[in-house]
Length: 241
Length: 202
Image 1 (cartoon, each protein chain N blue to C red):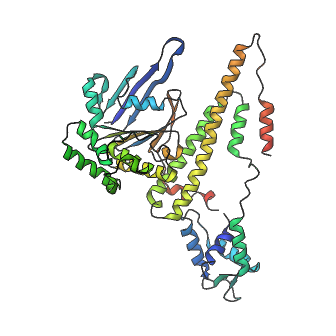
Image 2: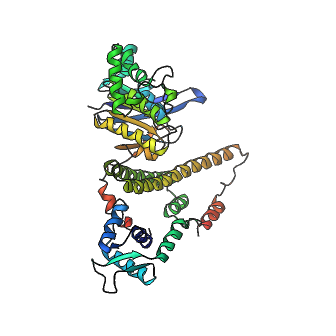
Image 3: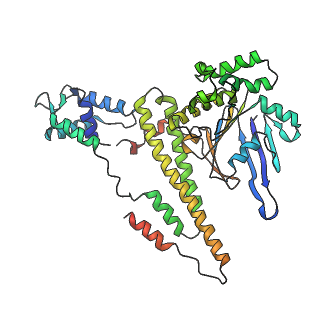
C-alpha cells in the first residue's frame, strides 16, 4: 500500500477573473521507503501539492490517502492526530521555536501527542544522536549553525513513528556541503522505511530522490525513469579522457 | 584532462614506475577516468623527449623502468596549475543549438524539447549522486570528481530552466501586444536576435 496517494487532486484559488488553478487533476503515489522529488518553476504548484499532501489544506476536488486512509473522511481532530503522529514537515526556514532547546524542539510533537515529557525528551535525544547532534541537544536555535538547525528540524520531522516526511526546499540557504548532508539524512530516513516528498527547484537536491516528477502549471508533465546503476557512468567512453 | 600534467604531478611526489603511475592516476581521479598503460608510456616518452622527466636509463620502456621529474618539468607543472583553461570564447554547444533550431521547426514544441533534455540530465545526475552516496563518502578524490560533474550538469539544467521561462515570457508578451493592437499586426519576428546570438557562437 502506498504511504501517500493523491488521486485526481485539483486545487483552485479565487473565482471569476481571478481564478488560479494551482493543481489540476494530479495523481501521485509514494511507497514506503521511497523518496520522490517534485521539481518545477515558481508557481507550478509545488508548495500547494505539499500542503495538500500534509493535510494542511484541502483539495477543491480529488482525494488524498495517507497509508490508505482517505483524508476526506477524517474529522478535524483525526487529521490533527495524523499530522502529529505520522507526518513530519521540514521547511526552508527550519521553523524551530526559539525559546526551546534543540531537544525540546524535537520532543515537542510527541509531547503535544500526549507522551510524557521524560519519554518525549528521551526519544528526541535519540533522534538528535542519530543525526550527530548529541552535543548540541541543550543549545537554543540561535546557538546553532544553519546546518545544525536544519538537522534539528529533520530530527523533529522523523522523531517517533513518523512514516511520511514532507520537505519544502529542505536545504534552504545552506551551502552545498550542508545541503548534501541534509539530503543524506532524508535518504537515511527513507532507508528506514519513511516515505519522503521533497519539493525543490534544485536539481542537485532532486538527484538524491528515487524518482523525480516535473510539475508545470499544476500538472505532472514528466518523470524520471527507473535508474541505471552508477556503474554505467564508469563505462561511458566519453568519460575516459 | 591533461594526462601529461597529471603524470608530472604524480612524479612531483617522487620517482615512480609506469604501472604505478597508472594506478595512482586512476585512484587520484576516483577511478572515473580509466587510463590504459599504453597512454602512460607514450606520454612518458614525450615528457622525456621534452626534458620534463628523466628515466633510470636509456633502455626500452618496461614496467621496471623508473621516472622522475626534472626541474623544467616542475616549472612546467607549476605554470600549468596557475594557467586558467580557455573558457573565454563561448563553445558551440549542441544543446543550445538544438533549442534554437526547435524554435524554427514548424510543429515542434520547444518546451517539450527542453523537458526531454532536462529529464535526461536529471537522470544522469541521479546516477552520479548514487555513485557519491555509495562510494564518495570514503573517497575524497571521487567526491571531488562527482561534484564537478554534478555542478556541470546542474548548470546546464539551470540554463534550460532559464530558457524555458524566457520563452514563456516572450510568448506572453507577444500575445499581449497582439491583443492590445488596434488592428492585426504581423507577428513580431525574433529572428534577427536569434541570428545575432547564434552568430556569437561561431
